[in-house]
Image (cartoon, helix red, strand yellow):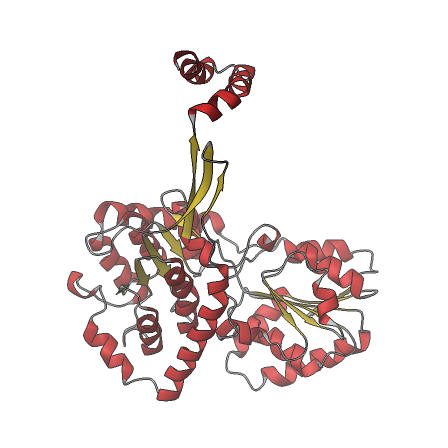
Amino acid sequence: MRVINTQETNFREELKKWKNFRISHQTEIEHQVRQILTKVRLKGDKALLEYTARFDRVKLSPDNILVSKTEIEAARKKISREEKQSLILAKKRIIRFHQRQLPYPWTISNKKREILGQKVIPLSRVGIYVPGGKAFYPSSVLMNALPARIAGVKEIFMVTPPQPEGINPAILIAAKLCGINKIFKVGGAQAIAALAYGTETIPRVDKIVGPGNIFVAQAKKLVAGEVGIDIIAGPSEILIIADKTAQPEFIAADLLSQAEHDEEAKAILITPAKNLVAQVKKEIESQIAQLSRQQILRSALKKNGIIIITENISQAIELANELAPEHLMLTVKDPFRVLGKIKNAGSVFLGNFSPVAAGDYLAGPNHVLPTGGTARFSSPLGVYDFIKFFSFTYLSEEQLKKLGKDIIRLARLEGLEAHARSVELRLINH
C-alpha cells in the first residue's frame, strides 16, 4: 500500500489518481455488451444458450434454463443444518431492519373541498442478479430479494451464472428462503438482456437489481430506461478512519476483507496516528500469508491500496466525505461523535467490533451499496427501490373557483393558452 501525507506538495495529485481510477478498455467492453444485448433481444433463448456455452462453458437446452424443483430439493442435502440456520438468522435480521423502511400512503383533505394525496404501489415483477464467478454469494440473494418481498413485489425472478457442477446449493437454499418465484441458469450481460427484453423462457421485468462484474454493470447501464435498475456497482471499496486507539490487526483484517473481492477493489486507511501506519502494514503482510486469495489481495493493494496520514481526525473526516466510500469504518475513540459529521458513505461501521463482514452478511442493513463516489447522491438498496408512487388530486367546483384565477394567470405567464382555457371554461359554464 502506498503511503502519502496530506502535507506533501503532490498529495492532491496522488489522491486524484486514486479517485479517478477507471477499469481500462471501457469502450471495448461497451461494444461487446451492446452486441450481446442486441443478439438476445432478437434471438431470445437461442442467444442465451450460445453465450452460456461460450462464456460459462455450460451446455443447456431450452428445457433446463429454469432451475427445477428437483435441483432445489437436492441442494437441501448439500448444505449443513448449521449453514442453513445461519442463513435463516440473516434473513430474520435483514427483514427486521428493512421493515422500518416501508413508506405509507397519505392524504391532505380540506373539508372535502379538495383531497390531495400519494399512493404507494409495489413493482409487479423484479429480476435480481446474483454473481457466481470468482465466489458465490447467497448473502446477495437475501439482500436483494427480501426488501422486494417486504415491498410487496409479487414476482421475483433470479438469474445467476451456471457452473459445470450446477448452481451453488447455498444460493438455491437462500432463494428458497426468500420465496423467489423462478431461478434461471443464466449470467453475464446476456442475463441482463433477458430480464430487460424478455425471451421465450425468461419474462421481462420492471426492474433489475444486484451487483455483478463489469459486463453486468455495463449491461445494466445500457438497458436503463427500458427497465429500472438500482445502481451501477463498481469494485468493492473500504475506507477506514482510525486514531491511536484503533487495533492494527483489526484494521489490516478489514482492509483485506474487501480487497479479496477482486483485483480492482479499493482499500484506504486515513489516520493522523503515524505510529499506526507501520503496524498496519506489518499486520497486512502477516495476515496475507495465511489467506488463500493472495494473488488477488496483493494485486488489489498494489493498484488501489493507499494510506493517508492527516494532521488530525477532522481532516480525515473531510477526506472521507470527499471520497464518499462504499464502506466507511470509524475505528476511533468516540465513533458516534464522528458519525454526526459524516455526509457521504454507503454504509458506516462504528468502533473496533463492527467489522464490514457483519454488514455483508447479517447485521441487517443492506450490503448492496453505492460505489465510485456515488454515495454523494445515492443510497443503499432498500424497500424504496421496489415501490413507486403516484399522486392524486380532487378539487370540488367551489375549490376550483377559488384557485382558478391564479391557475389561469400562471398558465398565461408561461404562454400556454390551452391550459388557461381548460380552467376558464369550467369557471364560465358553471
